[in-house]
Image (cartoon, rainbow, N blue to C red; front, top):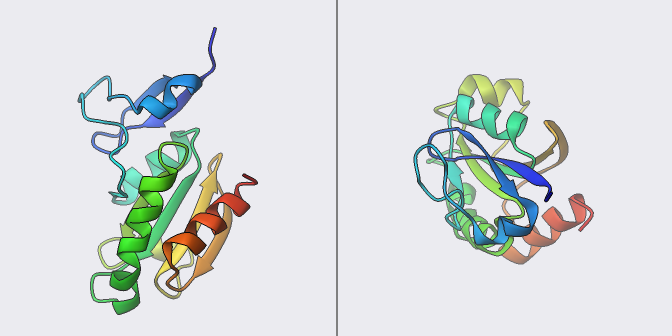
Length: 146
């Protein structure tokens, strides 16, 4: 039997089982029927962040940002481009630190934009500052050993 990965729906938070060999097909959530991957980062609150990080078998890349942050806005297209290139092998999320101040505090976010990679529920890499799409994709792949 094929190995199944747990993939958390970015829309409703339901954990779905997706056969590894069918991951590239994307798939839809068994509960809400929305696509599991859309080629762009999912904006999440604290509950969504925790569900993705704690329940997903996929590596998670998180952009901690704020709407008033110029470098955050400047990096947004590069982050979108990296999501299109690396999904569905990697999930991309955005956390608005203004709306989720308690989460940002617990995560030790001191400057934005800050990017963090989670695997198996643990943070495995972090970097601060805006980066271009090529550098972002290279950092993700290096951090994940790909």
